[in-house]
Image (tube, rainbow, N blue to C red; front, side, top):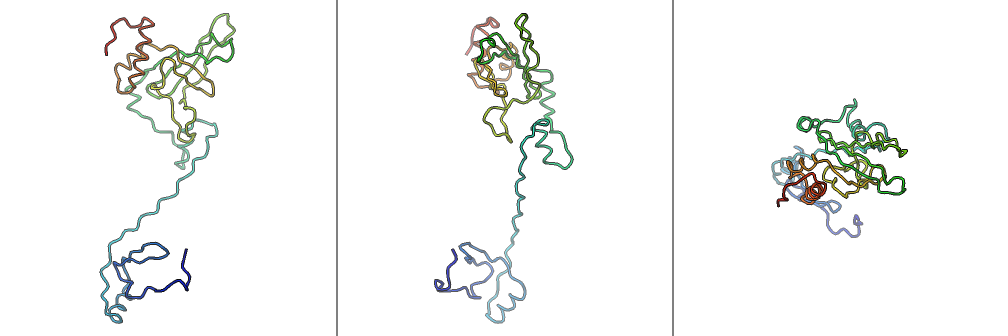
Amino acid sequence: MEKSDAEVTEYYQPKDLQVGETIYILGRRMLLVDCDRFTRDYYQKALCIQQKPAIPYKPKPKEPPPRPVPPHDGLGTLEDSIQNTKYFLPQPPRKDVVRQLLNANKYLRYIMKIDVVHPEDEVRRFILRYSLSEGTCYIYEPVIRNSGIWGGKYLRDSFLVKPGSDPLNPVYYTPVDFYIGATIIVHHQRFIIIDADLYVYRYMQANPEKFPCDVIDNIRNHMFKSGFLTEDIRD
């Protein structure tokens, strides 16, 4: 709070205002870095004070205020919507070309069941296919004959958002989250992973640095129980 005239006991004088000195204005420290030619001449002639050379000072550029990202309206993907707020002419999101080349046509497949709510859903099974090149998931339901279940596509290739993440900065499911017994939530529907392709384990063996040890052990133990692996378990 600014002091009243009655509370002020001393004021700044011209001799206090010299280049290189620090003064206080409304509680803030102000460094005097330069003065004009008239002021220098006045101090020299009237006060016999030689002002110091100007202190090099580069003003800090003002940062533009952050642009608010509008909520996703459901048209197209979230990535497309965010990209359109950055440029005047819409541009598609950049692709990780190296990742696409190294993982072209490589998929991790898992079998899921519904976290049962209705008894008739007990027999339903869903295939989760994770694309290593795109990071997207595709889910479809195989047809079960004489069950009344038609099957078909459940989810087109898209990024699976983890529940509770920021809608404007979402966290997506990755293979680290996929293991036997894991619960995956897709559009408020809960699924439980009950099986995995042998290629999943082979991929983990080739890329152990990408997976926690407990996830690798989980898949490996499942492969042994399912009879896909016969060699001894090595530490």
